[in-house]
Length: 297
Length: 181
Image (cartoon, rainbow over all chains, first blue to last red; front, side, top):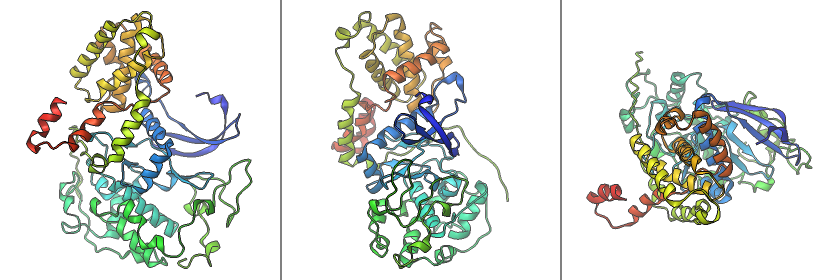
């Protein structure tokens, strides 16, 4: 790719594997996200992270794939789900970006996975205990964390480091026991660290002023055993999505404004810039503006 | 609070995912997208002037030996051959570059499939230093460009588990059947 075709408009974020810029394609005026990948080990050419990331993004281009990822049996593990990686397209579609860590499960299994996968706040407890064998449950945990963050406008488990991360989770879900989490004894870092025992805090207290269906759905995601977490398919059938406010068609959603196009009718002026450093409430709809439309707010 | 570290270097591998292997849509998608990665077979007649079929056989044999010696993931060799054929189907190549091309194809396939990819230096040693790391890295970009960065080819190995799961095989024979595929 020739960088002269783009003018850089700003910096969107920075991950472990590269910096993402907001840029404009000079010829078409289209706004794009560019990821700059550092060639750390020059002697070995293009990094394998980059090759695999391009592979995942190419597969995503196929709309059918995207749809199956969103609603059907999970065929794909994203492993780095977090608010900063969720993009809303000009048509109001939610897209998941940053596939630097994505490997398709659709290949024959038996591959090595790193346990340092998800961004800390959204990392499933089995990963915090060093699990190397894991499944789509790590994504469903992250979905629970993101859902909770949307309800609260602040992260549920904002650990400053890996050990504090575990403390944050254990404080809310209660110290795991062999009853609440039988598989814990098989995890590599189990017994390496012990925490003071404490009971679980009801999620109603963690996400106060939230409608009961939302709390109930949150309970379905935030459980210790990965296999007990609600699947994406089941979650879509949860009463939360069938009670007011009902899910809107994507054409009715407030969308971020893109250069050159007249904004569609929306409830509020959308946020024009995103940054991982800004609080999430700058990037989501102000609940006050939705009062009267949404009974649970 | 006691903290100690027991990290080991052993490769721990993920389990096959039944959600994938029992879903007919996955097999159907594989069959559909496989076409995109099939090389034009008649390149010896249409594209190549210098390279003969027996030369491809020689370089393929060498590539297979390297993959075996390095105990690469079993997908690396077929994937590298797919890259080689797709490249030769679009790019007239001189025969003295054929081994360099083979090395680049393994270099790339290993990056996609191996936990610890083959290093440029090691591959050069396997050519008895007839190529240099600099050439390998330069050609890496040429090959990526010619293959339009479409490196996630569907290869025959992708079908094995899907087929085995659909066959009425006795459980105790599964390991043997898999070994012979």
